[in-house]
Length: 568
Image (cartoon, rainbow, N blue to C red; front, side):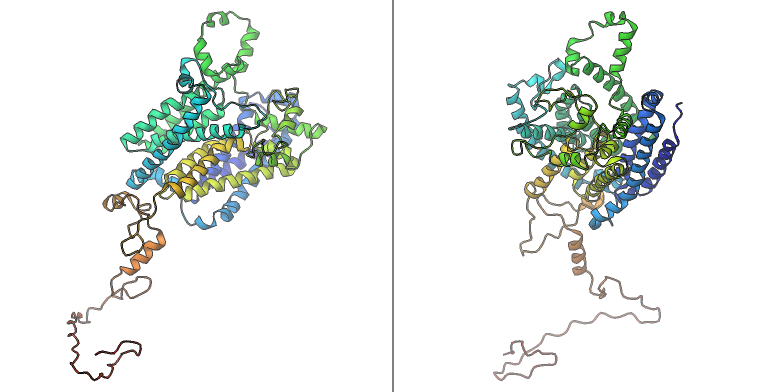
């Protein structure tokens, strides 16, 4: 085991302590997303120290530089743990009194709720309505290459949304289409995992069978995780029934499969091909490769290793560049470039580029103009990105603040998911994208979530049917099926197109329907009658009032008001 410095062990202790505290706060909504961020740090930074050769890092950078990098990790962890509850309290003040809907679905049987299942059915219809024309555009752009788009395992994979690194014209729409397709593919997987309607499940599984190979047989691990893992997690924790040990065993087996699959992906990338092309060529030269020299074999093995899991190494590079003066923090310019990235370059030709300065500092310059002058871009990591923006002291805190806002955003989706299955889909997709944010806090990773949120916003306002009102013009007084238990929802179904009753309307209705003996405003019953007190006898109905037939106006009886009409 390598000899790690003291700040490494401090970072480990802070991670474990913060993880236990966030686990205790899991019902508040921000506990689970915060734990996902801590897990991301553990994989990208602690995992780098074990997965790659830490002793070679010591020889390359020096023990002092690595110790400084570990102190930056500690600063991020402490700042993140302190900021998350504060940001959540300010950002979700309106819904802080609610508890986690995700945990309610995971630990109970709320997924069987007929209202929730009808919402899943409606959301599938909305997705198909948007997915069919998008695939139509993709077929047109690929000259109707149906096999390359939906059957890439045959050896040919189409690229309907390909573009240059520096876009222009309609390239922004192409990027938008690609990110929307990622969101839809992940959503189909989640629907297939949680739906109880056989027809809905069958349709979702059929669409997954022709859409997910498009990403699994590509060469980009980010989109593989974004499309496959949300459905897997939804099935393990929400869809399937079994002991927790069985669920974690399934996750462990899935992790081993992804590990071996990603090794194959990296091997194909080392040969300049995607996985589909590797399947087409087969392994005809396997026997010849076994007879190659030992150095070439070792080089091939290094190509298949996950070289992207080196964010701590990049943090050490950034620290070294700043110390020797080869790189100067840009004081938020890179964060600004990430923020304005959605603006099409056709509208802003001089829009700042993202991460090009650091790629040149790392020695990847010399590319073409279409490639922004670099041959490859370099991810700086979640913490390293903050250091490139605001230096070694304030940079980790800036990154911690951004991740605290991300946690608060996911917590809002969780707390507001009552009766809205689409928010659970967005929440699951956001949890998976959190792991991808470990490489860079960038909109390029979050675009599937953002465009999915826009689709949900449009559907919630224009895709739902208007509330049906009673013939007298009053509001719909149907029970609030979004919060009712499955038994209540089954006994009092909500008719199609009827608006779900809010909590305030339900309380007002109960006050109106309260028995007359409940004269207290809060609905408290009258005090119990003592044993000695005789039982009250029901009063006989008052006799009808008889008005004598006389033309003279009668004197008003007691209790008669002046503004009432005179009895004639």
